[in-house]
Image (cartoon, rainbow, N blue to C red; front, side, top):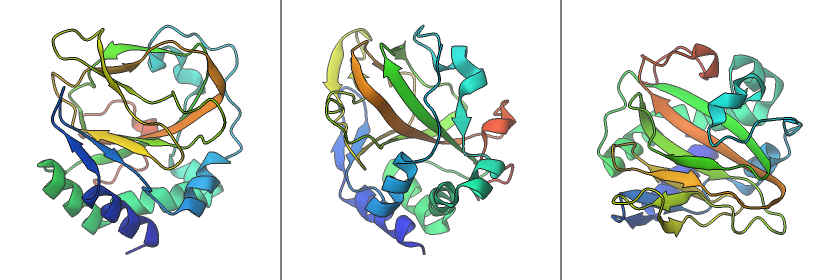
Length: 216
């Protein structure tokens, strides 16, 4: 088992488990600090001239995914992928979250949000079986940049803002009630994060996957 896989499992075991407004986990010290620092320092430029319309897909042409080429060019991304493909990591997630990842595919997106970026209230599409947000930024002004966990009864009402910070994370199992988003605010610098999903084989955008091989 890699150090990154071992530390993820330890973080998951000690995570804060919340049942309201819907089931989610808050994690700290997710991976080795040096690996997360390498990920934060990846030489990707924040996209310019993007549309801030509340949905990431309106800027599909400039989104960054940890596909095979990216993993080959940037070894730190391959280390993260390797950790999340470790059979013991998969077993730990299944046991903690009560899900079956058999036949799933791994998807990772590197996000660099700037300015007045925002995300409308939404629930993840049904082909996502697992969603985790790994926060990378650590600079001044980034402390209020966590994911908005929204109320079930009123998806426009903020229930809690997930803690944002270097090597922290938010995890949930997508469902009909898992409303979340990111209300418009003035982002200082660049809000960097990685979205980690296990998705079903029905996932259409195959170029977004770490590989075509099922995780188990």
